[in-house]
Every structure is written in structure tokens, then in C-alpha cells.
Image 1 (cartoon, rainbow, N blue to C red):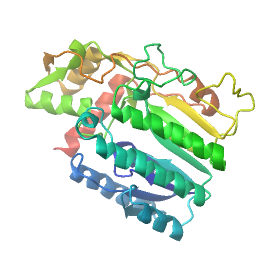
Image 2 (cartoon, rainbow, N blue to C red; image 1 turned 135 degrees about the vertical axis):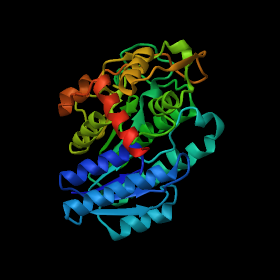
Image 3 (cartoon, rainbow, N blue to C red; image 1 turned 90 degrees about the horizontal axis):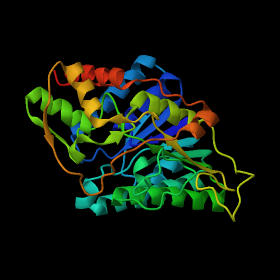
Image 4 (cartoon, helix red, strand yellow; image 1 turned 180 degrees about the vertical axis):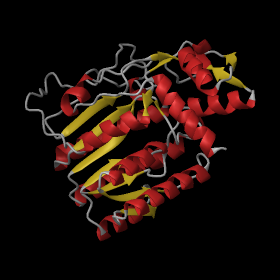
Length: 340
């Protein structure tokens, strides 16, 4: 298959492309390499992918620098190459940044996603898989979070744009028969992570002897999910386009399925961990205690996340394997090597 991966210079996108190349797929990788965070880290990921492709000697990797919000660039790409599947990971990320710059989320997460949907429609793409987020559950406190319950009260604009993506995808699945699968990621962490994410910030500050900030006085619980486990579930999902649910009822609609070829899945570890334990595991991996600053809950934050992943397990055999302790050790090993 020829698979388009958007956001390939990003954290999860990098790992997805690497896994696809290792199994022999042909990959077209795109990214705008914007400066939301250090572009040098993005370039390092891309260089690593290029070197991996050269070692494999299969000539199945192409990188294209483009902004998904540029409809002309997307059309040009699809005019010159036939894409079988799309794994769409390009987006403006970050919960708190959406409070400062909502326009960036409109451009990337709404305009950009529309361009991907249009390209999928006219390019006769066999399956569009895309990243959603556990943040769509928002004000919902009924945990573990299930895809089969409504998620219509997001607490940040970022989450609202991701929920919009799910609904936009449904309209294309219904109108044009485009198979789409949305995956709600739960707190992904691991090597090559984003510098604005908690594990990265905690590691940097602990090593520098600076305080780390624990909001909600450290009483958060998060369904931390190691990136390799996310990638495994994401690629397995991409390999299995959804079909209409023959039992779906319009008078009692299931929020996770449809009479169109459309699905929503949670993808998480399904083992929530207290933030304090997360920090303790990091202290153990670093061999150094943290200076902790306890702060109140921030606007837009939710106290707890917990994924019900039964659907993904039943449909594709998804089974995360990485413990918090092992995952953090692997991150710290990468961090020490990358930053000397």
C-alpha cells in the first residue's frame, strides 16, 4: 500500500512512519515543520526517518513539506500520486495554547482537515484514519470514558475542533461512502516526545534542579499510554476500514458507530496513574528527586482520564504492553542521548 502520513515530523507521526517503513509499506510523509515548538527536533526526526529508509534500501519513502491548510498544495500532491490509505496526524496540538491562539486551530484542525477529507473523497482513498483526543470527553465525569456515550461538552477550543473533526468525517462517510476511523488518544508519552508535554518538561526541570509544576495539587490521574502501543493500535486500525453497523438505530443512535462506514475508538492504556506516581517513576529513572510546586486546577483541565478500550481490543486485538516504569525509562534513555 501507499500510505500518506500527515504530521510526519511530529511526535506520533514520526513513530508511525518508522513502523510503516519497517514493515515494507510505501510512505508519503508530509509536514509543515512549523515553529509551535523547536523545529530542530522535527528536523531531527525527519533525518532519522530518511536514514532508516536508506538503511532499508527499499526506496519507499518520500517527504513533502506542505501545510495541510493549503488546498492547492494538497491537490497537487494527490494529482501526481495515488494514495491508498491516509493516517492523518497533522494538527495544531496543545490544550493551553488554544486559549491564546484559537485561530491556529481553525486553520490546521478545521480548514486543514476539510482539505484532507476532500482529497480522500476525490482521490478514492480506501480508508482515512485520523487523530482525535480524549479531551473531547470534557465535562463528562462518567469514567472509564466510553465511545458509546456522548462527548458533546468539550472544555477547550482544541477539544472542540477535534470533536468537530469526528462529525465532519461522519458527514463524508455518510454522503460519499468514505471509510473513516477516529482514534481518541489518551496522554501519549515516549521517546521523541513534544517539548511542551509534561514528561519532557518534568525531565528538563528535574535535571536542571528547577521546580516542576503539578496542577490540581498533583491529584490528577491520567491514562498514560506509551507511544509504541499507540502506533500499534493506530496502524492496525488503518489496516481495517470500517463498515456500516447494520444494527445502528436512528431512534437510539450509538455515538461510536453509524449506518455509514464510520467509527470512533478510544486508544489508551486503560490503567490510569496518579500524577504523583508518574513523577516518582521519573525520579527513579533519573536518579534525582524533583522539587515540586503544587498549583490549583487550570482552566480547561480535567481531573481524570480513563479509557474504556474494549471496542479496540475486540475489533483489532489492541493490547497495550508497556508499563509506566518501562516507558519512562525508555524516554529518559532517549532524552539523555539526544541532549547529551
